[in-house]
Each structure stands twice: as C-alpha cells, then as structure tokens.
Length: 245
Ligand code: G3P
Ligand code: MG
Image (cartoon, rainbow, N blue to C red):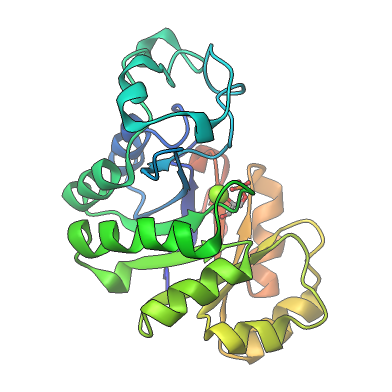
C-alpha cells in the first residue's frame, strides 16, 4: 500500500517539468514521500519515463517515441517547455529514474502506459528487469496501468508485487478484474467517483487512490468518502494538516 494521503503526480507536475529527475528532487525537498510517474518504451525497446507517445506537447520537437533510440535522448530538451531553468533536463531512462528515486528514498507508483506500438509482454519484459536491477524496497512500489493485460503480464512474472488497476470510471466488472490480477488498490479519476463506489472498494480491503486533484476544496470530500490518497500536481494547494489527515 502507498500509505500516504498525497502522491506527487508525475513528480509535482505544476512545480517542475513532469517526469524529470529535477521534479523528483523537488518532490523530495517538499517533504513528500511518494511519486507517481509514467513509463513507456522507445523504438529500440528502452524503457523511459514519459507520459505521451509523442514529443509534441513537452518538447520543441515533434515525432513519435517509437521512432527514437536511447542515443537520441541527449538531444531532446524536456525542461524548457516548463521554464528555461530546466533546459538541461533530458528524458530519464527507467534505470536512471529508479536509481535517483532510490537515492532520495521516495516510494514509487510506476504507471505503465499502454500505446499501440508495443504489446503488454514487450513492455513488461523491458520494465521488470530494470526494477529487479535498480529497485530494492518492493513494499514501496506499486505498479499501475489502465491496461489490465499489462497488469496480468506483470502478475504472471511477479506473484508478490503490488498492483493497482487504473480506470477513469469504475466498470461494472471491477471486482472480477481486481481479483483476477490480485490488485491491492484501485486508482480512479476523482470526478465520477461516488460514495457508494468508494465504500464498495474499501469493503473489499482495497486501497483507493484518485487522480488528479489540484483544488484544495475537492480534497476533504474525497477523504471523507474513504479515499486513501490523492495524486496531485501541486501539494501546496492541498492542506492535509488543515483537513486533519
Ligand atoms: O496514475 C494516475 C494518473 O497519472 C493517470 O493518468 O494520464 O495522468 O497518467 P495520467
Ligand atoms: Mg500517470
């Protein structure tokens, strides 16, 4: 379990360029204990920390990650879109990110992205060896994905790892899916979540996390519903002391 009421979404994406090493350093400096980051694959199979499957939103370049290799990363600035202070930031490989987070002592929710250019087995074969090589505290790791096939592939390889199923809204067959992959948590978009759904999830002994909460007034009603933790881009907006969490 994450055991933390606030999780830094993409490493406090409102305060530093998302999914960068610098964002993780800032997250740690702010006293946060857990981060959520996204992992995907380059064309050469390298696992990298990046949310999108194209460069377009977060760089001054365009094109698909599927057309890149690890050698290309040194030429792609993923910090300037946020601020010129971060122009040195490069897309981290999963290995680089795991080593950095380990040094900082942060807990990790690794979200595995599902894009059509690779299969569930391909991504899992790229991600699991890096975790085995560079991560040491598996109580402080949760793997999540919107793609149940990816989570099944992780579960086949790693019977003990903590898995979280991501959905935008809770589907009717949620309990069957959660049981099939033996998930420890359910991760949902906060807006459609009802109190009844939250209660049903909690009644199964599952942890419940919601994304992405950046307005302070949304937080207390969600915690009151039974939500265990919120993914936020900006922890300054959510005063957990004031709302007695
Ligand atoms: O893992 C929670 C959240 O990150 C899922 O959505 O698009 O921000 O990766 P997204
Ligand atoms: Mg994510």
